[in-house]
Length: 402
Image (cartoon, rainbow, N blue to C red; front, top):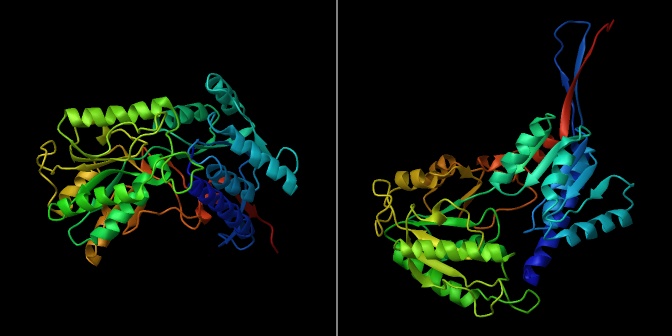
């Protein structure tokens, strides 16, 4: 159901990751260290960690595999890929392409399970001592469970887990650009990404202008419908459970005082389509403040540091909005718009996240490290740093040099 434009974009990005890591494979460098005694020489080698288990989600079923497997293969590891039970065909198609490209048997492996058998089979995979590394993208709760399982055999782990990204619009921001960036971040893949703008904070002096322009732009540019239909920008949500969560978040917020500016209900198309929705007057006591929505719901918060629950009290200074933005157990991505250069540096350094978009709502690229802090995970994907998670350092001390 993903809009065709987004699907094509995902394939392009996946190809970019594969090309990037193919190039980076040539740049895995060891070290020559200063010797501590005259007749010794000290070296550091980097070697593949071993068999890598890669567990990938449904929202980017090709790109997530390319990002993980590209790094693993470049480092010299073999890969066992377990795709989401909702999107197995993309993984199997990649396995077919790997075979056509000449990969030896056993290098690029795909295993698929049904939803009911996944926990048992993943446990068998992670209990196997031959598997030396796990890379997982998914929810924080499942990530913690998998880390516990990996601890039994002391496996290396990389975890890209849940997010709850703040999106801050300061008084100096270019409002039109901020609206565009909000649309890019919030509604990409119908709001089903881990780095979506989930908590929107707008300075009191520009709040009404931003919300008015955002609502108008949503109505003008967002079109919901089947993925293959020309011009559609939003598709269905992945499951009935997913659409029920968006409904619950909207209902809870409205019952606690939030206002629906546009959308707010299932789409007239039926099925798992939901209208792109804008809420204002959102406060931190509402469910969507602490739960990742994963749907086309844009909540604009109205709260200050001293009165976090009072509707209509919008943020007025930098320190309070940073404190509110950092008031989360997770820290994957954050965004803000400002034309004040000093403020840009202060806020970028202060936000407790692994990635910051400044005057941009699109931050993903193969050039840059992707990952979070706090309960958003450990390790990084993308960039040259991604290979480090699939490499072990071996120190060699050579003595007896005459």
